[in-house]
Length: 124
Image (cartoon, rainbow, N blue to C red; front, side, top):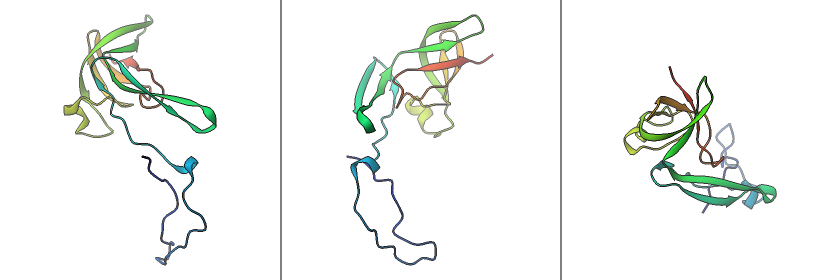
């Protein structure tokens, strides 16, 4: 099931807007899969033009970029998440979330719901 992201049914004046055509498949969105901390699981979804998106359902490890280079670190918990305050207690991983790893705090820079990878920058 998808969500249609189209025009409103009302004009800017408040009057009713009669749509000329119905929904199209390319205008549909998809449900948000909440990437969590756990055993690595992923889901493939078809994109427009035959492209494929890899959505992460859960992951244990994250690629952390440091001043010396990149390291693979284990994620312990989510400390803060600007997308939603309730994502912290549910350990949902989204872009911009600050996580506690075994090498220190890190901020997620990738989009795990679209990229299929988990990248972060070490906070000092």
